[in-house]
Amino acid sequence: MVTDQNHSYIDKHDSSSSTRIFGLDEQNAKVYSVLSREIGALDKKLDNYHSEYNSLKKAVKRLERDVGTQKIELDDLDECVDRETVVDLIHEIIPSLINEKGKSSSDSSNSSEEFDSVKTGSGENNLEKTILALSNELQKMRTEAEWRNETASQAGSNRFSSTSHVSMGQYFEYTDEYETYWVEFTALFNNRRKRESRSPTQMYNILSIEIGLSASTLASFYRHQKSPRRTSVDKIIEWVEKEGNKK
Image (cartoon, rainbow, N blue to C red):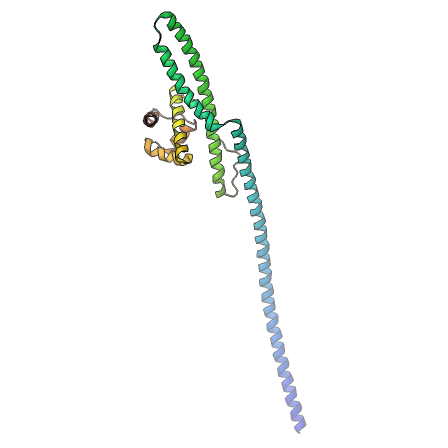
């Protein structure tokens, strides 16, 4: 009798243990299944991050290549034209030629001398126009180089931007009067910008307040892109004369 009771107790104990073990196995299987799904999702995210990283890495290389191209173009331009020296020298030569022409005209006293003065003045006028044309071309190159440099420095704000092709826009032909004040304006603009260590954009904003014209109007006049209105030119002339008297 005792033996039967013992067997009955053992059978119940084994049955209870088996049920408990089976329950644990089933729970573990569910946990394993959930973890497997989560690991799979994480693996997929990791693959996506890796793909995005490769795309960003390629974009950075493209940007570095574009910036490098801009630096090479600027270096080539600097080798062709010493902008700081040549343009400033031309701005110094032109006023001296105008002064010499005025002295030559005032020293004439007879018809023969007047005739010689006319010929001399004509020759100086041709030389003046030649130098002025050269000044315009060099100033245009200088402005374009500065514009390219400023654009390249701002390209970092957009990793997909390309600065390989920067258009200067239309190069507008000015009248002789406008051209004269353009030369003086650009000379004063560049000297002051260099002296105060400012960017072109900063200088446009400062002069916009001083002159009373918009920064875009001053920029288009500086870049020789648009012929300003007469009222705008009058304000620029007033500023040029005022700024020139500070020297």
